[in-house]
Image (cartoon, rainbow, N blue to C red; front, side, top):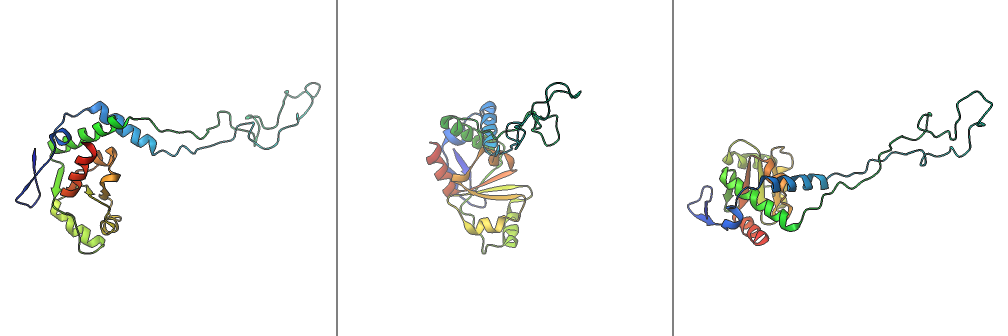
Length: 201
């Protein structure tokens, strides 16, 4: 398969098995859900009655006081007592096989091509790491949010784009399904396309 390079006279030949496969909605949903679940911290914690300090002694005698029986002053019914169903730290991560994850990425990339949301450029560079320079550069691609994928990390691009809410820069190693489906367009350099083909082949 040949894809047109933006503002260029040449085409780039890409692997049909990566950029021309069928869209598997269920698999893509699994990959997106697994990635977002893995990003959850799961550090919420509350103290139950056994974790609250104190409450070791029985507040009063079992019988004869006229009050309801009580075994501890740290009951959830008491002020400063423990929480009834206390939240505990947990792991939200969902296991997804590497083969399934890569197949989901291939499916997303193929769908980007079909929807004409994939843009390929020879190279993506700006004169200086300034937000103003990035804004001027992005005018070439029109309106909408953009994900820029480079072959390797480019600090100048990161610095120029970090203050823009609709532009994100990543390299191939940082590519993920949530980012791929969340932007109006994805801009790839030719070098990043080659790295992706090596990764997903």
